[in-house]
Image 1 (cartoon, one colour):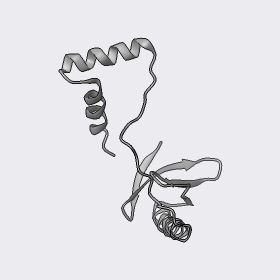
Image 2: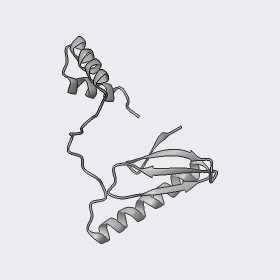
Image 3: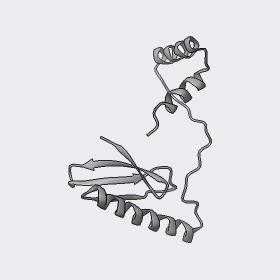
Image 4: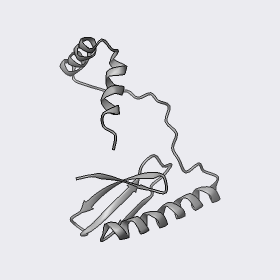
Length: 110
């Protein structure tokens, strides 16, 4: 099961790793890997803060923007029948396929 934790304004996906018996967090939307591990949620928060601070410091030293920027465009590949179904769903709602996807994502706020 994956969850989202916000640390200093940055979101991280949290999951439990049964192999190590630890929680693992990984910051999303960063220009590189910034992950952290801990045994408890409280410790995960502390480790996340430390990991994020170090990652941002390293990016600053290297002249790299730590945050990844997105174009707002992405391509989705679907089987032909699912594509047709998505177009039908959009038409039934009176919206474009693009708006159907935007509306679906808006309903998934984490």
